[in-house]
Amino acid sequence: MPNDLFPLDPTSTVPPGRPEEHRTGEPTRAEGAATLSAAMRTSLDRSGGAVGILLAATPAVAFVAADAVGGLTWAFIALAVAAPVTFGVRLARRESLRAAVVGLAVAGVCAAVAAFSGEARAFFLLPTLIPAALGVLFLGSVLVRRPVTGTLFNRLVGGPEDWRRHPRLIRVYTVSTLAGVVLHALNLTLRAVAYLADQPAVLAALGVAAVPAFAALAAGTLVAARRATGPRVATAA
Image (cartoon, rainbow, N blue to C red; front, side, top):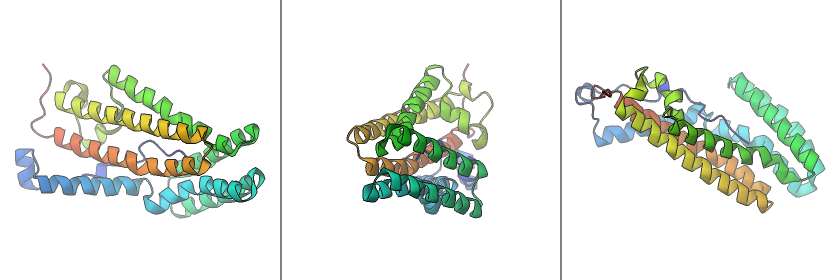
C-alpha cells in the first residue's frame, strides 16, 4: 500500500549542535553519524514507527493472505474486516486522521480496481504506477531548479527563503531529489516485474520496504540541509 511521500516533521530530527560545532560549521565525524542516526530514527517514528508501518500494510497483507488461501472472494472479505479495524487502531494510537482516512480510501480504490479486473494483482496496480508519476515529478523539479526536497524541507530546517540562490543548499536539494528519482525508478522496476509475474505477496512486501528507504532519504536530506544552512552558506552573485 502506498504511504505518504515524506510523512515527517523535520523540525525535530536534527538536535542542536554543540557550541564548537556552531563555531566551525563542521561537526566531527562521530557527531555527524550520531545526528544522522537520530534523524533516521525520528523519520521512522514520524512514519508511525515499526507498529505504524505494519498497521499501514495490514489491509494489503490480509488481502494477499486470504487470496492465497481461499481466492479473491475471501480476499475482499478479509480486506473489508482489516481495513476498518486498522483505521480504528490508527486513530486509537492518535495517528494523523488524514493519514488514516487516506489509507482507508486507498484500500477501497485498490479493491475496486481488483474487483473490476477480477485479478488479485490488480489490487496493486495503482501503487505500482505511483512511483512513475513521482519519479517524473522529482526529475521535472530538478530541471526547473526547484528540487522537491527543497520545497518540502527548506523552511523546516531553517533555510533562507531564497534558498535557490544558495549554491550549497541547491546542491544538497538537487542531489537528494535525484536520489529520490533513483529510488522511484527502482521501486517502479521491482513493482512492475512482480506485477507482470503475478506475485501479489512480493508487491505487498515492496510497499512495506519503500517506507524505510524513503525515510533514509529524508533523514539524509535534513541533516545535509541543516549543515548547509550554517554560517558558511554562500549566496550566489
